[in-house]
Length: 378
Ligand SMILES: [Zn+2]
Image (cartoon, rainbow, N blue to C red):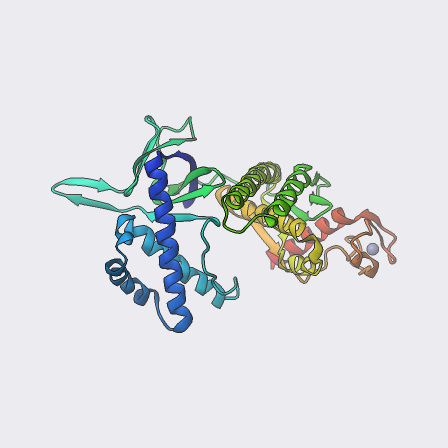
């Protein structure tokens, strides 16, 4: 089976390379915003129409010629992806990109031959620990010390600046052999605020403490940021600090989630979780805890994201049960709906019909398991 895998390296650009990376951020943002403006005035413009603008733009704005042209085309592709997402109700109307906010650009792998020699625009040398990128030439990298070479075909490279660091993320197409199924057992998992994950095997994975720690840090820095003059040196410095905390939070979160997913997928072949759309909507009402919600939602999405691809790679079945299914209110033994469970403060379900006493999230995970198996067997 062919899969797409990401390899993320830290980049160590020279001062000149940093300058060129910043220029490329600026140019891709310029093209993106320019085309977004055109689309706002004429929604019928296609990707092809916008691509045709590029040569004209390059004539008018010479600085666009200094950067990798592939990254400019990808900026248009990304914009069009944004529009198609919006049309399919998967996202809002594309917004103008701002300087200094989540800056990145993507370049695609291109190979060409000239006079019998093959040229590749992205090359990784893991022995010398360098990556060759279009226009930037060789940049020092760090990461994947045990890897001798990239085990597949590079499709593209995304260059990002996060806080004070630079990264390159390579999207690689790899051929993998699917492992045999061994267990043939199934598990339901409930994802929640009190306990991050509770399984129908009665395994509890609590919410890690670091979430609180990082939340406090981000909150403090955001307050600091609000007192600074927008766009000033100190403002940008503070923004970078915030990005840095978010980066640490993301890394820690990924580790936690990967450990949980590993546990769950080791012992089971069918993994069933909820569709989280409704959960998110319900929680949006409470606005004064915006940051908390944001962090929680990102954690939930990360669990689903990692479960999805790990199940695919490990030859497991991943099922998501419908979001309208109220897994917390239904008694997992008799199916009676206990309305008082609507209050998320009630941690213990005492079924008014059959008398079952069971912890809220554990009960939900059994319901999720049953509901998932029902749809799986049909
Ligand atoms: Zn009952």
